[in-house]
Length: 218
Image (cartoon, rainbow, N blue to C red):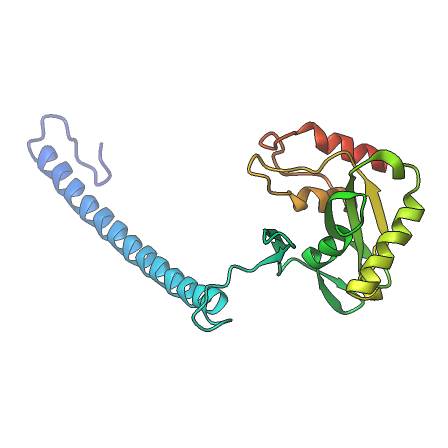
């Protein structure tokens, strides 16, 4: 029995009734889909317009007639350009917003530093402290972390200022990088904060380096 009280067995009107019901519901579904598509299209258009404004402001309005990448770069005495990192990657130390690329550049001037990655770590008084992961050119300075920290902070003070000095450094055998050579600072930041690493590390150039770095904190 259909709702309404009549039998549909041998009822010639049943096929027409179900056809009418399908036609009505099909039109309703069409209307709903069309409405949803219109709303989604408006959302996409609005997002695209906002992104266009944001991109124009971020990349084209900072310097007239020049595309601004947001990367920090240095040029060495041989004329080679070195991309240091994002200029918007900053650490807030006692109200001073200091670029990690700027600190890394200063630390890299130490004669025994091969590679360096700087991250911020929560600090009760300063808000954030400067934490540096350092790969050495030679192992002569191993076990002399305090002396190395003094030397590095001397360079930082001279080139940037005392507010950018490292609170802590850790000597590591390598840094977590993608196969294209990008240092994954989110992983280093999580390790420094003692947080769980939620990022997939299987795509790293050397996934085992993460556990080697974490071993320094045990």
